[in-house]
Image 1 (cartoon, rainbow, N blue to C red):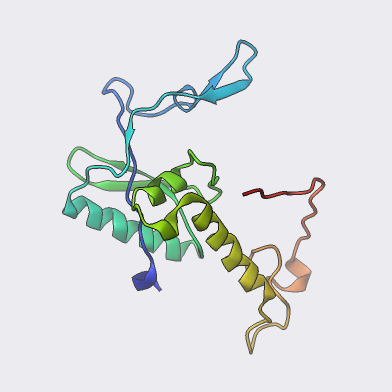
Image 2: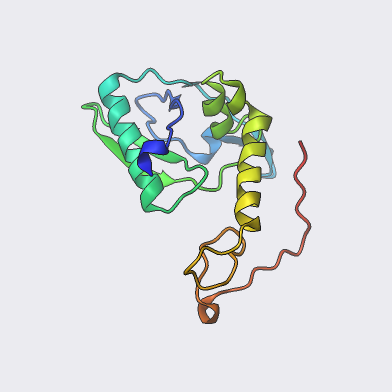
Length: 171
């Protein structure tokens, strides 16, 4: 339910007027061979300096998008704000990393709430997903357990996903 959703403090990138859109080289650095070598220096604020009217638009839009996309534990959006204060949601970034410098971690850290600290936040989200996987199907459902975090589909239309490399999460 949208009333139970919480929008974290926003992050703002301060871009020069002559280059108002971030390109790849504004995010990552690369060596002479084109191999990523690090993160580019960025000028950003978190939390962003957002007035109440703009916050209300961003918050309402983020909650609507979260519900419309069927997101469960978190969602992240790239948003542009026009000089007149109009908000445009550009894309949903639903595959966010939880590295110490990631956007979700920075935004959660801006709350200064211990429950939203980096490792605690990541652990909570993983445990939520694990609990959902362990629960039996809801009464009246199709009788099949949910697979791979996706909403279940009829068996004839389902696709299998196989990982060829082990996935390890270290804290």
